[in-house]
Amino acid sequence: MGEWLSDPVNWSGSRGIPMRVLEHLGYVGLTMLIACAIAIPLGLFVGHTGRGRVLIVSGIGILRALPTLGMVFLFALLFYRGVLPSVWALVLLAVPPVLSGVYAGISSVNRTVVDAARSMGLTEWQILFRVEVPNGLQVMIGGVRAGILQVVATATVVAYAKADGLGVFLVEGTQINDNGRLFGGAVIIAVLAIAVDGLMALIQKFAISPGLRATQPPAGPLKESGRQEAVASAQGGTT
Image 1: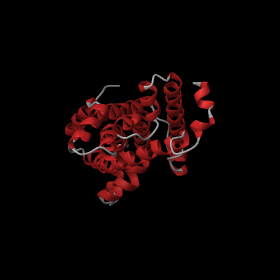
Image 2: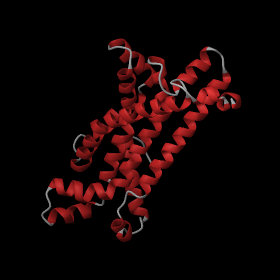
Image 3: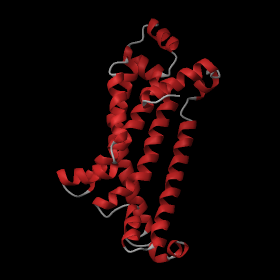
Image 4: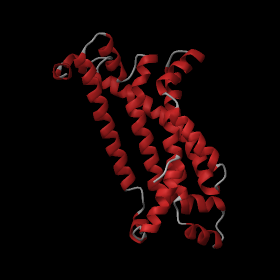
């Protein structure tokens, strides 16, 4: 593995590690763009209105149970080989954590604050985007963070349908019995996942505005318990 990682040939050209990393991040970015476009509006609606909660929780459980690699081959058979079958399979993987995070973030906002905003004459749109979203933003970003981490680690399946991304090193290493290439590719994927997760952790940390950080009281046992219940209910589990 050390020899393969230190070989200059593997760090240059269209089949080199830097190009594969860019391809991998491209798939992750496209997947998350589609997943967020689907999950965020739906999570905001369910979290704000409470309608469709049971249906959404059930749907999240079903999507979590789908095998990503199997969906790649299914989409490839139904449509065509290329980028989209793999991307749509990854979208099915990314939607549940993003949807759970958005729904849990909106649901965890103190209802007293929401009622106070409503009594002041704010419209439902104003309550959603000026009260609920700012207060639940950290939890919402946590859902996006979880989705990105899962997609970065799982986007290797793209290589089975189209020879792109970091998954190529895993596929080639398995096919030609090259353990150096196989383990080297796995290490690169792990390092990339850690780096992306660290970046999202920083974004999540500073997501709350200074005003909210200064005035937000520390979470007591009751408030923290309610927040955990909201997160668990969105994920279909228990605290």
